[in-house]
Image (cartoon, rainbow, N blue to C red; front, side):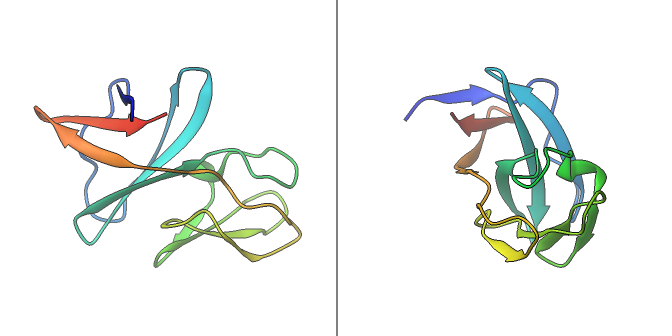
Length: 101
């Protein structure tokens, strides 16, 4: 595994969604119940940024066309998107958010 620092992202507060770029990948980071999760930040339907969408529990709804994704797994919960988001492993190291790219 190769963990990369998530830019200026610090450990987000509960339920906070943050969008960041790492190695040319657009990634969404969220804190759910004290556990950090990271998935792709561009909707697989039309490429809108999921970090601009609405979080509902452990899901995020794309603001453009309403696709819903699991923030824990990247799985499509509701279309029109058909393909899941990539899911990334996350850890905190020396106070920095690190993502396995």
